[in-house]
Image (tube, rainbow, N blue to C red; front, side, top):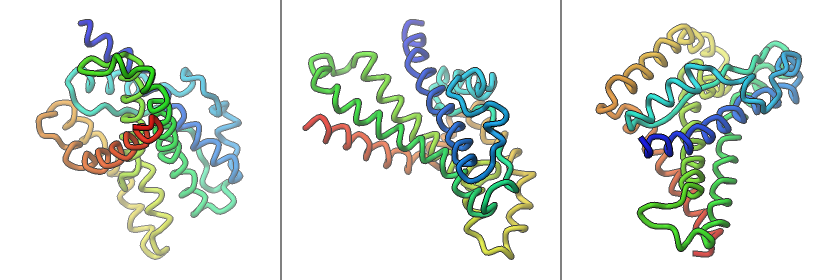
Length: 227
């Protein structure tokens, strides 16, 4: 029970920060590109209460953590009106990329903080690193995972909007036909991850790029610490 409480103490703040900054980044990018919808609905705030989805931000990630599966989640999407953007097609790409991009920046900041604190924490590092070191590691991992997960080219993930912007116009409507089925794929992915974690669906799909990126961030932390 103590280990579970400690894990929750580390994971929940990291996940909430990652998700809230991700959503706010979408809103600010849209605002800079002409869409004021998120600002008008008071969603350009870091107050987690305005972004938290009880299922996606608390129930799903909490359950996955208890099962030892990869932890991911989502918040209430920040509203974006594509037709209000200065350049709807490429503007939507920029808005979509802002979320994962922010997660990767947060991961870098976490790695720098871990590197700066490493000399101070060095005597305590080992099989049972201090809570602060654990928190920074999971903060990096969650941001990397959330960024990579949202880049999947499955509607309604951010990656799907980027793909739509890159596709030749004559193919966009064909890709858009997948949108109604995207949520079904997402629900199926959550269900498989939740009820059959032994299949390792996420570990075998986005696991390799997440591990690659995590290694780079830990190298950054090591470089900052001077080791």
